[in-house]
Length: 284
Image (cartoon, rainbow, N blue to C red; front, side):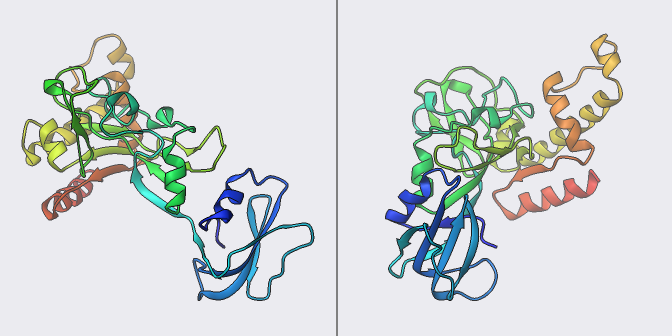
């Protein structure tokens, strides 16, 4: 069953309004279901925000708001599998970006708290057919007074508003899942879905310049999290060895080492994929 739909023009405007206690029928549309063949000309009925019926023989119920698609295509909504939608506005303006923390936090950073339900990017994303997104933190390297971003999850280089010092953190933080529902003050469907880490250039930078060193540091951090989980009382009393991460970051990694939360690994090349698979096999 299709859960979300995409249609351009007047239909989008109508569907953007709160759907509670409302029945909408989109007629004369080409329907593209998730499963099954396309329906060349059909009707889809939405009741209280959910799809009640669709098909070539479906008719608009009495009292429904009818939208004539005039042959337009209705598809399931698209899901952005990894983006900074709702957590970032303008890539070149640091003050509008809440998708990374510099050196303040790493694994403990929960991007769900950065989600902006009034983000102007929501409307643009919906216009492009995106109705939901996994929002993932990026590594924020602020050394030298700049932020940096690339496809492997480093914030775009920019000097405006940047502050702090030091190498980017090893872990980006914790991902969330949002639904881009217009007018919804709480977009977050789920939080703390995964902890992000990079094996590309971002990870190499955090490890001092080498991809190989990244794996060593990740394994060390996971071992620290295991030791911390076993010895919390001793840690609070200062009776443990020094750990490479803060208490908050270690706490965030405990569900990862317990197998309850996945580690979301960004890669840039085939060797990164092999390293990620090797890490997964060794950390079982």
